[in-house]
Image (cartoon, one colour):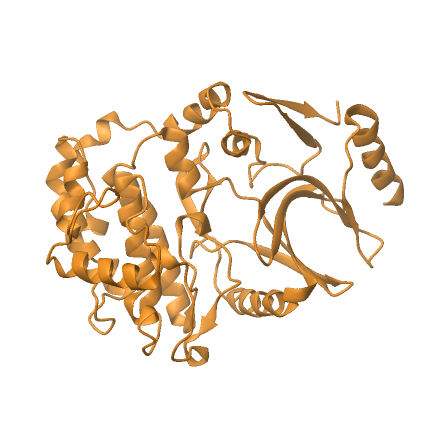
Length: 378
């Protein structure tokens, strides 16, 4: 209501002297109060907000006016995906969208943190068991997209998010359908996918289909094992050359930034642990996902049957604590100086999706070494 909106703004201004941005929408019954900015990109920004009609914390994606066609595209695909169970198929829950003053606003469920955030918070690469759980869920998501002939076209660690790592360890969902296409819409020469996750057929301007998403997921698997990017090229030629050499296992001239010459070598970066007995299963699946020829690349339904995905026990699991990441998030707030890293720590305060409607609103205050959290409603 108008009264509650004014009260919220007054709380922010009176207690913190900070400007609060409120998106008042044509429908007088609801609007959004911005709590914090989660990320900013070329097409727009994503904000953590309180929806005034539901009093729930949500992620509000606001697409710049000049890129309205991308907002329209994403809404079109999200509406198509409503026919799929988002929880069963590990897809972000899309609540609604609004078009106000030529600006698209897309409301999603609030999620926890990205795969990159998880790796950073624990200061280590992921265990094979963790990689297995995350990969299995993403294969389910890709299988669902394939059933609708939809290509995500932007698979990368930032677009795979944990739902709530404390309550649902390693439960993930695929987000951001702003670059999605149907297979029929893909054309020769389309420059899609982030360069480090771009499939060879995209680099070569060849025929494209859902196989490009499988390649990108393979890159993400390798990233999780290494704790860093598998490919960090400076140009498309370098990217293609590196991909072909490593995936064909013919070797590559080693540079300062290249510490291995084939996919087989990436396991050598790992310490000798009991989980290494399962690395061959991991490599077997990875090689099939990163097959240079897209026609020979494994499809999601078959990948879900691969031994790496179907195996039950990992020898190192006795040492795995599912709350480790949450603990790391807490301790790192005093040791990191970057506000970007501190924002990772703040994700632990995100509203659990299955909790009662939100009645508290938090504001986050940063300095160079730590942060404080204030409850505006107490």
